[in-house]
Amino acid sequence: MTAWHRDDWTLHAKCRGMQDALFPEASDQKRAKLVCTGCPVRMECLAEALDNRIEWGVWGGMTERERRLLLRQRSDVVSWRSILVGKQDANPAKRLEIGDIAR
Image 1 (cartoon, rainbow, N blue to C red):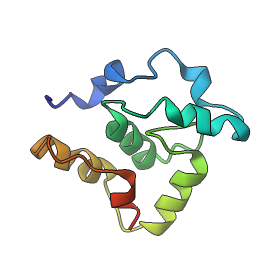
Image 2 (image 1 turned 90 degrees about the vertical axis):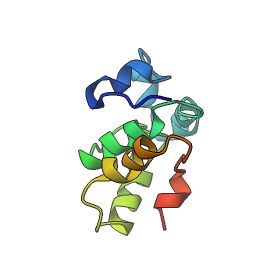
Image 3 (image 1 turned 180 degrees about the horizontal axis):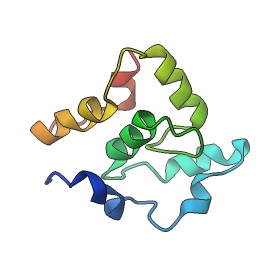
Image 4 (image 1 turned 60 degrees about the vertical axis):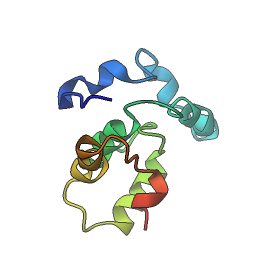
């Protein structure tokens, strides 16, 4: 897997063209999160939302509430991109999982 330029990761997203489906009411968020399963740019997406404190929608498989909780738990993180994507850029075989960063 090659590293994508920071600005064009959205071209590879599984949800490309599905914007409305990713900003559901609370009861439909689980269904929206399923779109993220297996997405090749899931970590780039999540890093974008966390670094920019995006408060709406499902990004990288996490809801607004889940992202807020993670940001509170890991207030020490300066750059989510360097944590989530930086390690993958250096070694594509090492895939981070959401549970890895929530500790």
